[in-house]
Structures are given as C-alpha cells and as structure tokens.
Image (cartoon, helix red, strand yellow):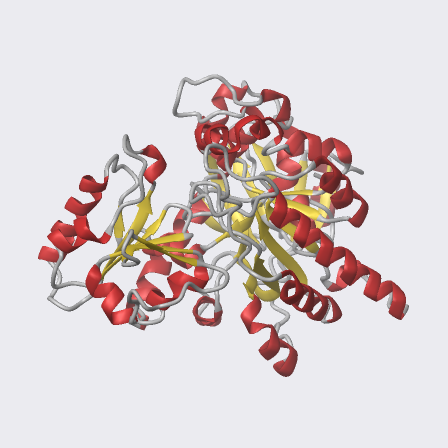
Length: 524
C-alpha cells in the first residue's frame, strides 16, 4: 500500500521500537538488519499492512456471546422461546438481555410486542435490541422499571410505539427512547467485562486486525486502558467517543499517552436511525409507508454546535448518517464548521487529527456526494451491509436503492474510503468483508451480485482497509502501509489476495498477525 514501492521482497522491523527499518530486496533488508537479526523465510507467502477496522463496537461484540442471540430466529415466537429458556436459568427479578432480532426476516414483518415476552418471562424484565441496535423490544416489567406508561411523552428525537389506546407496545425507537430502559439496567460487573474482552481479542488477531476504531463509551475506554497497562491489549485502539462526552474532553483535555496502543481520536454523532428499523432520516418517505421520513436523532442546530466545538479541538468528527436527509444535514454542519475556520483564519494541520467522516452513508443524494468530495469528507463504509441489506433496501427505498451503497461511485469521484465492519451488527472478518466489497454478494449464498457496478476492485478495497482507514483516523503517517518509519503492523496471508481467484478470497486464511514487530497470532 505504499505507492512509491507497491511490491517488495523483504521487510525489517526493529524489535525495540516496533517500527519498520527497511523495505526492499532480500539483500537490501539483510544489510540493514545485520548479523544479529532474527530472519523469517515465509516461502513466498504474502505480507500486507495489518487490517484496520474503521468502525466497530468491540465490547458490545464481545457480549454477543454472553446474551441471547436471536440472529437465526425467523419469528417473534422463536425469539420468545429463547427468552423462556434464559428466564428459566435466571433468578426472578434479574434482567434477561439479548438481541440481533430482525423482523425484516420474519414471515410476518410486523413489530413484535411486549405480550409475547410477558407470556414467557412475567417475573423478569426483558430487553432485546434489534440487529441494528436502534430498536429495543421490552416486556411490561421492563417498561415498569423504566417508568414508561401511557402518560410518558415521546422524546423529541425518538419514539415509543403505542397501540390504539396509547399504551406502549414494547418497542422503543432510537437512543432518546431506548435510553429510558438502558439507564435502569444494572451494569455488568468488572470481572465479566474483562472476561468478555479477553475472549474476543484473540478472534480479532486471528482475523489479521491490528487496529480498530472503537465507537463506544467511557467504560470501554477505561477497560482498554486496563488491558494496555497490563500488556494484554494485543492490538491498537482509537476511541471515537459519544458526543455527550465532548464537554468533559474540552474541560479535561485529551488524555493520550505516547505508546501508540490506545488514543482518543474523535467523537461520534448519531444523525439518524437505520434502514431496517425504518428510522433513517429521509428526504422522501419510505416506500409503501407515506409520511414516514424516519427520525433525525439530533436537531440540526445542536449538531452544528457539536461539530463546531469538536472542530475547534481538532478532533475527528464521525457522523452516523444512513438516510439521505441525515447525510445532507451532516454535510450542512460540516460545511459551516469549515467556513468558520476560514473566517477565523485558522489553518488546520491535517496531521493533528481533524477529520470529517460520514459513517455508513448508505443513501445519499448525488449533489451531496459532490459536496462530500469538495469538502474532503471521508466515507466510512461497511461493505457487508450492502449484501446483507439488499432486500430491505429494495423494499423500503424502491427505485432509490439503485444509488445506494455507492462505493465505486464514491471512489471514482475521489471521496476517501475507510472500510470497517460495524460489528456486532455484521461480521468483523476482513476477508469476508473484502469479498462483499469486491463481489457485492454474500460468500455463503449463491445469489447473484447486487448492483455489481458499485463493486470495488481488490486493490482499492484493500486500500480502504489499510491506508484509507489510517487516514480516517489521522494516522496515515504512522500506519496503513509497509513503509520505513511506520509501525510494524502486518498480516501474513497464505496467498496473494491480489491475484488469486475472487471466489477463493475468503479461504485465504491468515497465517500470522504482527503488531509492532511482535507475533500476536500464528507463527512465521
């Protein structure tokens, strides 16, 4: 991924600093290394920069193995049966939690209700998040604990679904509503959180991931700090924290150590909901649902204040924007923030960390794509969404779906791409995601490619998973390519992903993962 030297025979990494000392021919690298170097002959295998997942919720992903997982359920009753089984093993009064349910896969795609949960768990409060994390399905006891009644008003940027009598049905939409329940659920104890993280870190290392942009809160940040201090982290983490923490970051400053393992890089703003929940903020209403324009989850004026404040602090600004209205509002605020800097005569140094990103950017108006290019806004995309969402995109967006997930168009326009997973919503396996980006289909299914004209070529997809993601984190001077002076983070594949048959991409297993010159998975 180094344009000046795209292919080389050998690489030398200094074991003390963890940085790359030389890249070139075998003879050139041997001369730099000297006679005391440890030499590994990979027998022609391929070394790439370590994969950088530019959008993941790692601790939430870890807890997916602990809570109820309704991914495979194809009906409300099947989910309720999982709740019944878990409730039978849980002391009365304790929470039963889980998620990953997707009503769009059910024969009856209506929203589920509290009644089915009440029937199987009358003595347990139940909270089940949807696959996309933007809906919460709860029972009557959970509503009672949260104080949600027929008199509870809908929050301005969320919704409490109700029946004809105004009674809450058990479905809450978006954080302004779901937080009413989340705020009364007891936090897991520290030992459990540590155990879940310890369990998932090796899975990322086996996948060749050496850096993540973790989009979670202060609890996750503190947990990562503990693991870093104990020498147990094993990969690099850049935190993108909720916008609600911005006042504290301004007051206390950004506490970043110089160890290259953990840093606070930016803030996250939710502009809207999601496609599957039909809460994405739309310029035109959802297909077959007149009057439903989704939910803008933060007023534009408030978003402007947040973006302006973060811009002044030089922080990366990542805006969740799935619908075309959300993308437009986000770009409005970014453009005004850039104008503010220009009017003040402030010259920003890109290396300091200021980046503007649209997360997901699944549907966007053509004129706003052009504005993204002009403003230098990064498209932080998760290609597996394009194959997982194909049916609901056609169902809920109608003809608009033809310009959805427009990765090739963005690339050809010169919009920087950063690739990620959005786990736990989808898989975090980079090879599977790279296949989705380049083949526009799920490797586990036989369906034809979806909107194949938007497929990326392999080299461009790899760039988005390495240099593109590093740029999105304002770290392109330190990582993203195998270049002299950069961190020695690499992944060893059995075969060259650039010239093996595309259908074999997901079978090209990771032989080893290297972080700062140290082998954290596999062997050489």
